[in-house]
Image: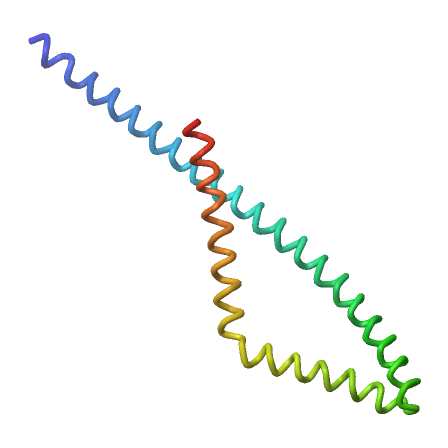
Length: 126
C-alpha cells in the first residue's frame, strides 16, 4: 500500500525534473546560438570595415599609379589603361578561380564555428 502512494509522487517529481531539464537544454541552445551569432556578427563587421578601408587604400594607390604611369608614358590614357588592364586581369582570375575561392571561404567559416565549440569543450574538460 505504501508503494502505490509513492508512485504518483515519483512520476510527478520525474515530470517536473524532466520539464526543468528540457527548459535548461533549450536555454543552453539559445545561449549557444546567441554566442555564435555574436561571433559571426563581430567577424562580419570587422571584415566589412577592413574591406571598406582596403578599398579606399587600393583606390587611391591605383589613382597615384595611374598618374605615375601617365608621366612615364606621356599620356593619361596609357596610364589609366594599364591600371585598368591590371584590374581586368585580376577580375578574370577571380572569376576563373571562383569555385576554389568559395570553397576556401566556406571551409574557413565552418572551421571558425567548430573551433569555438572545440575550445569551449576543452575548457569544460579542464
